[in-house]
Amino acid sequence: MATAENAKIQYESGQDLVSFVALTDQGDHKDFRGADSLWSNRSGYKPSVKPNGLATGGAITPAVSGTKDMVDVAALTCYLAGVKTTVGADTDVEVARPTIGTHVKYSITILANGTIAAVKGVEHTAFSDTRGAAGGPPYILPTSIEIGQVWLSAAATAVIDTDEIKQVVGTHCERYDYPTWEEKRSNVESGVLGYAGVLFASALPLIHSELSPVSAMPKKVYAQYYEPSFTDISKAENFVPPETSYSVSSKQIYQKTLGSSTSSLRQGSFTAYLEDGISDGLLLLAGENLWFRFYQDANNSTPYVLAQGILGIGRQFPAGDQISAACTISAESGADNVTG
Image (cartoon, rainbow, N blue to C red; front, side):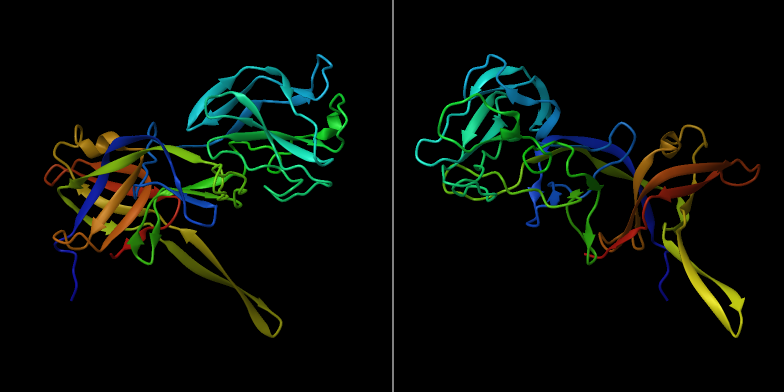
């Protein structure tokens, strides 16, 4: 009969900073992961995800000077490699007319050094929506940000018209906060703990490439996070993981019964026995969102139960027994079983 006689519980007692690093595209252009398995969510140590992209400003308009084939770009802020960067307004940015065909698209970009640059597409006799194709918008460098496009459909020089400027978010303009994403502070697949990261609501457009050879890729995604470290709870018992429970209700109607089921996420819990019930390290973290690991056999590195939630503390100071704390884990999702 299996028992938990030799079990142990660990809690997140510390955090190690990992400064902004590029996350790795897992191939679907939605799932991006770092190099660590767990991200802390403790107050003051939460992840900060900052994809490359425009944050504020950056409106593109026909040149106020009236100069032909020129546009102005308003001052803006953007995120580059995780850093919020201020870029001053730029005037008379040239978008030269086509000389071979009649149609050409320009991508107005922010370079990695925080300057504005117009990148010219391939000239053609008609527009294309295909990135890198003749008449289509050009690929831009992996470290650049596209803030808009200018579409020219005539070879004769002229003042740029507002209709020739395109800045639709997600189509012509890359914002750092679009599309939205959710943090995956752990990734347990088939019982194996993988790398933490983010999952975007939709695939990021493949508008970036090195100059040669062309290899389409999405924008860069950066994250700063804290990797948790763990400490054993030296005296503990009765661990209950946060898990989903189900209930059934029914209603009697003519000639039959209608049934329905509901689910709810119950709190995790355990009991910790304390030294003085006042200065114990675990007590200092009450109310914090922490990681917990439960090992059924303390001598083995796997399997274990992994859970993240807010630590609740209920202390008891009996006159003739061990001081203890009834601890709860209020989680956002159920615990995971890590088996390998």
